[in-house]
Amino acid sequence: MNRPTDEEIIAYVDDALPGDARAAFEARMAEDPTLVEEVARHRDTVAHVRAAYPEGEEKSFDTQALAALGLGGAEVVDIAAARDMRGARKGSRLIWSGAIAAALVGGILIGRITTPTADMVAARQGQLMAAASLEKALNDQPDGSAGAITIGMSFRTNGGYCRTFLRDGYAGLGCRERGGWTLPALVKSRAAEPHSVDFRLAGGDFPPALMAEVDARIVGAPLSSAEVDRARRAQWQ
Amino acid sequence: MSDFRRQLIAVLPRLHRLARTIVRNGQDCDDLFQKTIQRVLERKAQWEPGSRLDLWAARIMKNIWLDEVRMRGRWSRLVQPIPEQDFLSDGGMAAEDIERQIEGRRVRALTEALPEEQRLAVKLVLLNELSYAEAAEVLEIPEGTLTSRLARGRVALTRMIAEGRP
Image 1 (cartoon, each protein chain N blue to C red):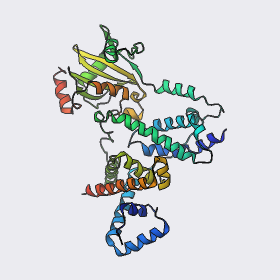
Image 2 (cartoon, rainbow over the protein chains, first blue to last red):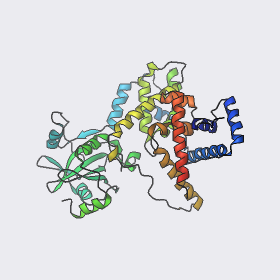
Image 3 (cartoon, chains in turn blue, brown):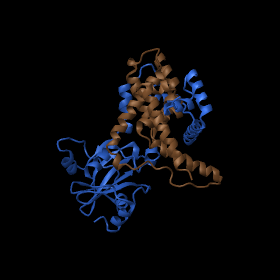
Image 4 (tube, one colour):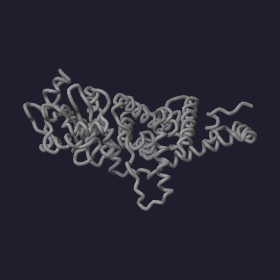
């Protein structure tokens, strides 16, 4: 008799073998102690995986939750309207610093520049720059440090350094230029809002639009924490 | 209330649980869940009454997820792994509870590191308790392909779990 395949062993452990195949498998086990051990190891894996992912409470859906999903009591559900609302809430609205945006995406017209938070940015010679608390955070905070401003990662570009950050519902990119930090990209994103799970996981979860900007500039790998520390002490020169 | 909507509401908890299974460990599953419901409502004319609404919706969820995975794949070299909580506090916990937590974290890391097709097969069957036929239907693959992915994932996990033991 051939030794059962991995598929058969797994199906036996999962109780997914049809009756006759199951009986044949058990007959085989009676003769082969190594097969018994293998089944035991696979059962152990199942127990480990299930224990590693506690079930948690089942989510319940009250009237409000149903309405938010477009499943409210009203018979007519306007999906387009629901989607617009959702887009507005979640939206990744790109706000660009004019000159750089033109250089980057030439030809594509991007909406007017809005200043998100006065104590975070300043305009200097038509350029959006980090100011006050944001400038300080970009200068001083290590990667992954969370506070009012969270710094994501730092990396080298052809001309210097850039760092990603999150603050007050914005995810952005700061690049060291002209003795300060220019802001070539700022993205309004739910992911950057405090209290969202994404925010707590901020090390990795920046909006794709911002990651595209990083991708376009990065030279080599992101800086290690030691490299960040050296760059910081050298004032990002 | 339409029959479709009533049936969909009845399977929402199951779909939410599925979203928790499909996303990578620690990620926000609500976004995947909401996108799925939105698309289900948009496409409800395509659903065949009498067929399993939960499996149909689950396929839609799987496709949204795989699109997302492909999109994120482009930046994957820039994205650090999602951190688990950085430290464990004993918080009065017994030593064996701490050990259990550490082991749970290790097993999650190993499971999440499986190739995506194996990861989905393993998690759908072990954590969502879908039958092989149901899991194959959700993943839109023949049952033989499902069992092969499942076996490869489980054999790899069993080996890795044993290797890391003291």
